[in-house]
Length: 221
Image (cartoon, rainbow, N blue to C red; front, top):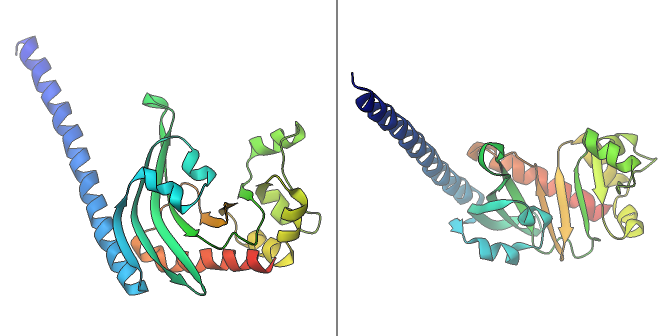
């Protein structure tokens, strides 16, 4: 077989494989959207398949929305959880580029008014490099009363005194027993999510219950 013909066949094969992968990914996303629409109906929530990036700011000025590029929000659900309004959505962003790029996908619960009584803060799982940073002066608010919380979480914010008051026994106990959460309180709103973890449609209801438990723990301090 002539070399130009072989090269052409290889290129065609690569193009077909890439096209097939894209089609399969799009098919899975369509199925996910349909399943989440059904989950929203069962919860009594309104559903919107997509939301433009420029409208994200209306949901809150969270650090999550300022990271990376290629930001996408979709499968938005809005309703009531307990006594609070909540907005759920799939959110993704990408860091880096080319072979070094990485896309983070997570299910996010946003409580538009739940942060009004809370100081601004960011809470995230603590990693080894955070511990190194704290030795170099990187802020990490720790609590002697809860070594488990301090071991597993990085807590930061501009008003440390107010943050310590907000993280009373109830909040410290909840997060010490429930690891892996990220929480942001900014601009009067509260965002609760597990970074890089997107719920399966059948996990939406328990996710709402867990996120609401985190919100209520913070409300009680």
